Picture 1 (cartoon, helix red, strand yellow):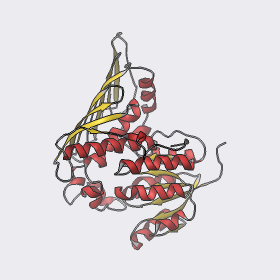
Picture 2 (tube, rainbow, N blue to C red; picture 1 turned 90 degrees about the vertical axis):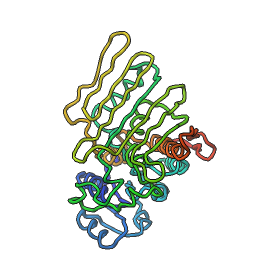
Picture 3 (cartoon, helix red, strand yellow; picture 1 turned 30 degrees about the vertical axis):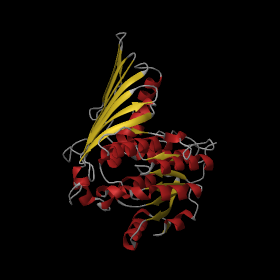
Picture 4 (cartoon, rainbow, N blue to C red; picture 1 turned 45 degrees about the horizontal axis):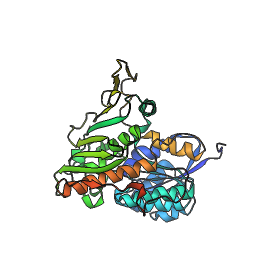
Length: 365
């Protein structure tokens, strides 16, 4: 039975995107209370507490978790996601973690295991998976729209070069509630670069749509000796399918990101162009189909994961960005970056079946 009691929500890492997206989405709902918020910097913390009306605020996130919130959004810098999401799950909360889920695949799969053990939902902030028509597209692929998948190609080019290089960042930051620390995006030791910062969206969506499991990755990045701006990889999947993943921080600011998928199989071809709100399926038997999408339907937004977190905590809704997809995405990105550092050497992916990653129980993810 769906719960009727107000959900108590908390946010760990109330920085740029949390204040820009996550907290306003929470605040717009009438079925929750903003219970606790945490970030470093006393002045900034007070500002976000008073502006949004949180009941409690602390620079120590553990004090926020001690209040036992029902749901927690983790939006701290990438390298802190594991620690904060782990502790939120152990405190009994359903958790939405910003992407990338973690920087280490072992930590990502550990979060999946912990969510299962706690019987809690674990979501990743991949907003593309909640856009109109995406669930229908996933269903069609699962039902054999192109038959057995043999080949996939994904290309993602976003307006983020100034995020990963330079001092200015995005023009939109000039009017945002907070401006992010550039180390979050420009320090490779903290997950800076295009692969973790942007390809994580495209890879997660591809894995969600197709159900494919990556087996090995061979890749190159530019540049390959510091924070990456561009990535190109070939992937072999369990079952024999092959794929190509590419991406670049190359779209001029003010333009919509280019995101396109080509999925071919034993029965035909599917093309999905998210930057054009267009999808078509062509089959060898002569049939043709597609999705009818309104202009702008596939423009990126990230309210879906936030709403899903609260809905799932209340006992209904769909987790279209589960921890399993988030962890599988980290598997691919980690292998991609390792391969590029090693001149393109294929890197095998252990996935959740590795002894240290294998879940010990079942439950929501």
